[in-house]
Length: 114
Length: 115
Image (cartoon, one colour):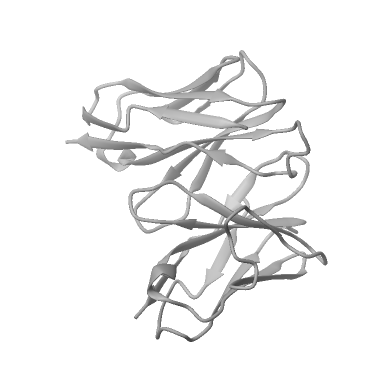
């Protein structure tokens, strides 16, 4: 069974204070690891897909990296508008897993204070 | 990026009535759509997977006779909550899977309150 664990559960930063969010996973046949941002009362917004260990992707102040066991979402010089819940999810490909099915972590609630 | 819409964005209904939620992929064809529910301060829980023209596949513990899913076209899936009860109150989110990159694009969600 695929499993995803995110840490920390909550993270408070001062504006400009860089940090990282962690996503540890176990999966049979990784098809992809996904990062989403979710604002209160809204659906998740797609950020990144990572497919293989060593891969990195960047978007504005965010950078996602992937190893065989975990992924990190690095936030550089965050701003208050980066405050949101960040969700990590994996899609496995073994054991007859339904195509496209995601397993989500519990999320990290990020609060950036001005 | 790909856009998914949901309608309505929120709905209040009385216990025992049925509610239909629509999910549309606006700029891509979603061969597969997913329905999730999310309780406050919790992550998304997959309810069912639907493929266009096929019967939906429900996750363990989800009542298929209570949560009716129809995926009649490549751009529209509907979720009908039948005989709703207060415990069905939740945030329902759909997503669409298009193309070969495994990426899911989520709708804005529907807040259901059953009184």
